[in-house]
Length: 167
Picture 1 (cartoon, helix red, strand yellow):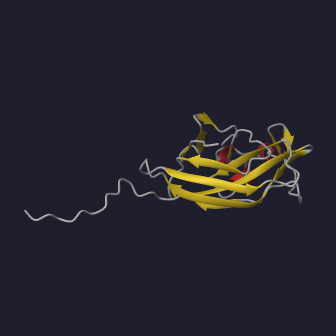
Picture 2 (cartoon, one colour; picture 1 turned 135 degrees about the vertical axis):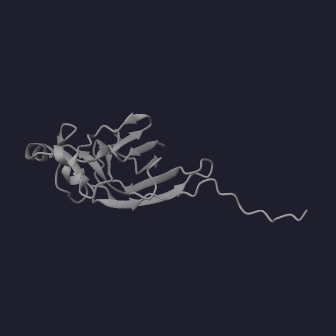
Picture 3 (cartoon, helix red, strand yellow; picture 1 turned 60 degrees about the vertical axis):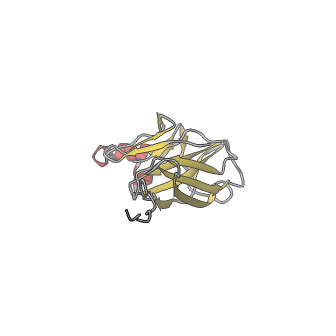
């Protein structure tokens, strides 16, 4: 599945395939203790502690540039599906170091429980992104470990030097 992602750094909005991620981005000033306790729930299910077999593992990232479109960053996130694949998965992404803890993140749409990768396009170059995969088990969301990557800086409109012809 190929998705388009655009991050507007000022508002921390992430767009995939033309629609805003289902998660809510919050400014640090808006987070209250009530909202922090409510962050234990996501999409109607409780977020559980990681546990063996129920969480995705071996998170990996491949970053690069689109050869056909200058300045277009492409990132492929990959993971090993949980031993107990669950009902669905979601990728959480943030540009804030503690965004996954404070609720300052965006979420992908629901992914198949067997899916082991997700492609992102259009990320802001040079920005560090933090991500994890949530697996929905019968009793709630089980998070993977958190990983990070720096989006590639793509050189735009590179033209190889041509030898100077004497006239």
